[in-house]
Image 1 (tube, rainbow, N blue to C red):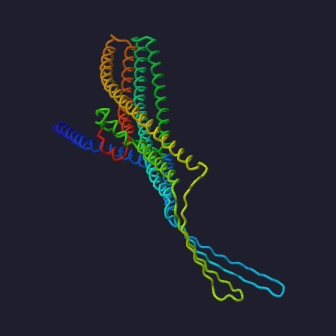
Image 2 (image 1 turned 180 degrees about the horizontal axis):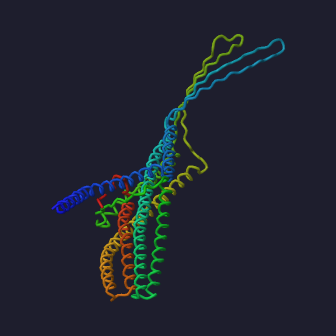
Image 3 (image 1 turned 180 degrees about the vertical axis):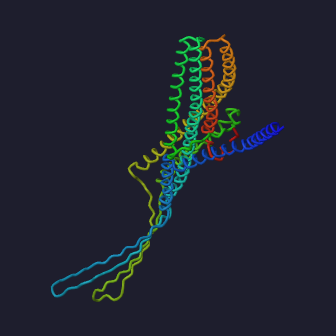
Length: 443
């Protein structure tokens, strides 16, 4: 009776442990997913903030923004103050004089009409906006490069785990083969073949470790910091890949590089108009006031002079300079327009390639899913037949190798399919942390 009660208590304890395990497991999994997701987003955020490429373009944007006050200064009045102090002494036969004049002059100049300066000021704004689009474009390129490197790292880690398991499996098979050889059930050839597979698996394992370290080093170079041990690429769902090509082509116009190039075309057009304004007259106002203190004999009190001038200037001939400047500006505008057309064609080609790459990866991933299932069934069947002696050791090794190869390809295709979705977003210029939040799905 006591043994029965003891057995019941033991069973009850195991049930409690099992329930606690089942209840705690989803929470543990969820916590792990949240941690790896936070690691990815946190590292990505810091990379986008401190990456040297982005910092370089950000400083170029700051330089472009400095052009605004420079251009505006041409439209604002210029005021200056001059202070002069002179020591003068004159001597002649029968007398001499000495004066120490001190003067202060305030000058003001202002363009009343200068259309060229006005248009030069207007063309700065598109340049600044283009620089802002350049910054966004580089951010998206770094974003995609970051995803590619993290994908390579995670894929390498998964392949390394499979390679390690395969190495352990081949060693176990080699040990079992030697035991059966010593028992007279297998030949030396079986042992040699099994040992060869051990070395092949070990080489694959070492190669996978090297690839993993290489991926980690490249990611560290991009992020400029240590990489967390557990990091995962968010799995995203992208329904727009099913949209018609014509609809997706329209989204290309919103790419940062496309918008930047359109803004530069606009800026070059403003430059053409500014150079044409060189044919028009200009009007300016200048004024000055001078106060002079001269302690010379016979002069009492300071002297004051005030002047104001309105100047109208009309260029009649400049040796062909204005014509040449207009022709140069027109050529630059046409060059920018051609670059915009070339960029539009290049973007369309990139979109087609990205969509085809997605379709290919999707088909390969589905095929690898079937391949893994088939290879697993085949390996289990050959293993049973090997136990009863109807299959050779080589047959079992081949089946195990095929299953390992199928699992490896499945890992690669799974990561490749997810990466192809990010590449479609990159081609469309839609990579952002906000977009990532809306597209992420649970694994």
